[in-house]
Each structure stands twice: as C-alpha cells, then as structure tokens.
Amino acid sequence: MATDDAKEAERGAEREEVQVLDLRSLSQDAAAAVLAQVARIERRTFPPSEALTLDRSLCRKPNSRLFFSRIDSAASTTSAASTASTVTGYVFYVRIKEKALLHKLCVEAGHRGQGIGGLLLAAVEEQLRREGCRTVHLWVDAERAAARRLYQRRGFEETRTVQDYYGPGRTGINMVLSLL
Image 1: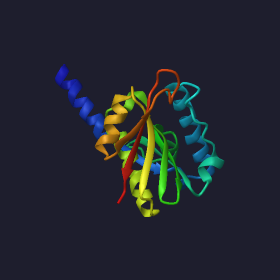
Image 2: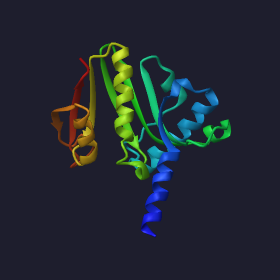
Image 3: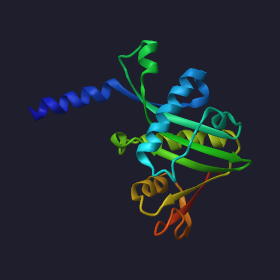
Image 4: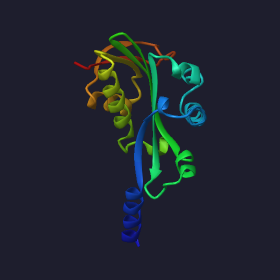
C-alpha cells in the first residue's frame, strides 16, 4: 500500500508544475484575483504589524514589482483552470536606482520546502539584473532560521543586526546580495 501511495505522489508531482509570474503580465481582473490571494496569505502568515497591504496602485509603480508562484496541473489547458490556480508564494520589492529592497517573500505554509522560495528569488534577481540593479537588501527576523538559510543559499550575506527591530525581543538581521 505504501508503494502505491508513493507512486501516486510521483504522478501528482508530474501533473503539477510551479510557475513564477510577474503580476504585470496579467489582466486587471486576474491581477486583482492574485492580490486577493496574496492578502489572504499575508493575514494567515504574518502578525498584523508585519502584514503588507499590496494593492494594484502600489504594484503598478515603475520601481516596484510583485512576482508570484502558482502550481498548475499539467493536464489543465482551459482558461478556467488557469484562472482558478492557487497562489503558493510571492515576493515584492522596490528598486531605487541601483539598490533594491526586498520587502516581502512568503511561501504558503503547505508549500514550503519545495524550492518555491528559491524560484521566486531567482526571478527577482534576474529582473533586477536586467534593470541594472547592483544590490538587493532585506531584513529578516533572527528567529526565522529557514528564511535565513534560503537567503544565504542565494548568496545574501548578513551585514548587521538591530535589537527589537520587529518589536520587543525580536532581532532583525539586515542581509545584502551583490548582483555584480
């Protein structure tokens, strides 16, 4: 029975493909639907003091961008199936000249550990290189060990810490990635 379960899991993985998309590539209606899913993930994942409110106007600014991941069934070819796909993660940044600030990276709890965070970061890095950006900066809670490991694997280096950055007793770590 366990063998049958393993085979079914393999078939399920083959039917699903992670896609990373730029919110700007979507129609207004599709972008609104994605932002609604992002808002739900934000509320479930972060305390109110850390949850971002991402609306279409913020995402339309020329120096800000939101990429999101979704898992689509390989068998789904209809547009209805495409629009019904679920957001599994997202990343949002703001770029000012040659420096970018990564404001948020989040992968839905049930999809963590599958490489989605790395795919999202790779998309951001590629886009920022095209835009002529030299460095990416971010802040991460010292207690978020998995996030710190992900950033380190992508080449981010810890540059400083600030006590109580996220609130009493919660240390923030600044990390920087050189894109040169």
